[in-house]
Image 1 (tube, rainbow, N blue to C red):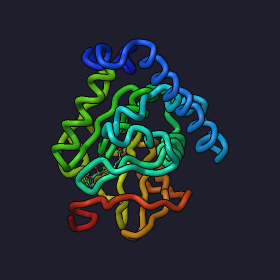
Image 2 (image 1 turned 180 degrees about the vertical axis):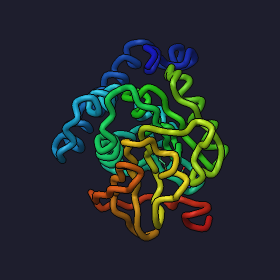
Image 3 (image 1 turned 30 degrees about the horizontal axis):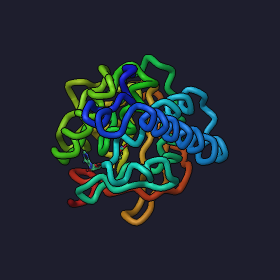
Length: 238
Ligand code: SAH
């Protein structure tokens, strides 16, 4: 990530002055630290790289101004169009389950605010992320660019079909809940690769980890969760 993440826009420098800005930045950093300790570490997220990334990334930049005070709270938040930025714990848990070493090419379905993509971008080599709602995709693209990420590609499309031109992927993270694993996604997963996806009903799902071993699915189940709907072919109707 570039060093400019918390640099304020110039007009705010003029309006509120340097000391207040520094105080505000420090307060957000403290809130972020508390989020990591109380919501992640205390609940068993242990991957040091995941924790470090979530300590660094200015999550408040991914929500609209009016909600920034709540950006580090223990809940999802609305991001427009009936969609949400996931709860910090879920982002931490899903990312940890992906077991990233740093060299992977990752596909994310459901860019939303772009926050999860930023976490992935810090921990993997390349991130391809797909969002079906154009407005969300352009806002996410802008924030990711402002924060200096150069290894994230945002595309507007139906993510249940994957991103065939960029396949195979070492890891796939689906950030919306569906009834089952869309076949194109499993096809686009590299041999030895891993996918994390909430699978179940519209009202509630289970976080599944799907490994591709000799072309076969090996599945394990983790936390119960509630995600917004994965919409499209092989998933729910919009
Ligand atoms: N990862 C996001 C949270 C995503 S919420 C974040 O960090 O903020 C789920 C997102 O999935 C929503 O933005 C929704 O529009 C999107 N979505 C649902 N079905 C989709 C599909 N088939 N293809 C692409 N995006 C989809």
